[in-house]
Length: 387
Image 1 (cartoon, helix red, strand yellow):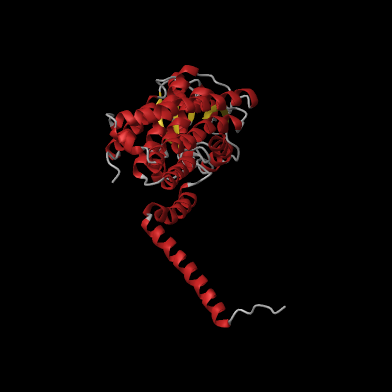
Image 2 (cartoon, one colour):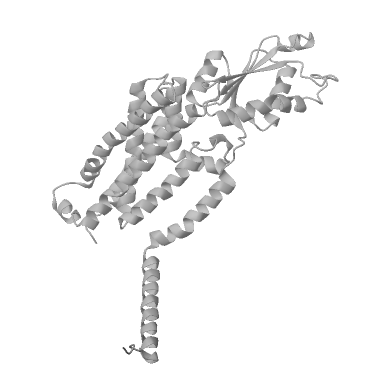
């Protein structure tokens, strides 16, 4: 049998047609990518954000940790010790307490992470060689931040006071004892820090995606026309879409906390009702932000991209993965604008410290403010037409 031979010109034409069609498809994809400004922006912004956050904002060695001081005597020795502690760069005196009860309130509210108590007659006891105790209390809900500062405290203070003849006249050992007390998590168990944080992290991811797809899904399915034809206002549409997911988020939070109690032994020292109430506020805040994304995005892909763009700084700048106090000031300001930052403080304070609403009013008001801002933007952005 004779074999069919394809002429050379036909093969070249077929090959040329293949290359032409492939090139046309390639050009079409680039044109479509150029028109999709959100996706094009993500290509540039996402790696830049990761580089800047990891390169500048992330620091596992915290500095300038807020510290309260309780001076039960005013002496040159006490002032020298406090100056030496601040010179270590780990501690920054932000509050002068008047009683031990005030120190307890400052630690419970999260306004300070450390408290230093210099007892009465401290200098006299040092002069007599009695080697009195200097008490340092640490909020150990974040064991990384507390542990690194406490471990470096004694040698750094000793080095800072080595040239002070009034404190250490020719001595190489501190004439007093630094007694540390890691409160709320004395064993430094990481699960006590991670499990409460996972409640907020998982809720952030799921709630954002759920509502970010809500409006764009209606548009792509063609059901938005029917919705817009109904006598319903934008705020009614938003509340109707958000409300069901509040229950979903509440079930998720209850499931995570229950597993944390049963499997990891994470305690809940505070009010479960208060935890449920503020968790609902946090869920509503994330749902409002996700709904805002859905009013801005043109399709579901853009909505998901926006959600992950917002989720990334929440993970890195909230204090979940890295100590919040270790970040530079500009990164902390960004972190304060993120819902997860405030919820992490709330959930850890309630579960590990037994904090009350009075202790958490700053973070509660911050969450409420973020929710209202997101809702206002979403309502103003809601499209009354499909143009």
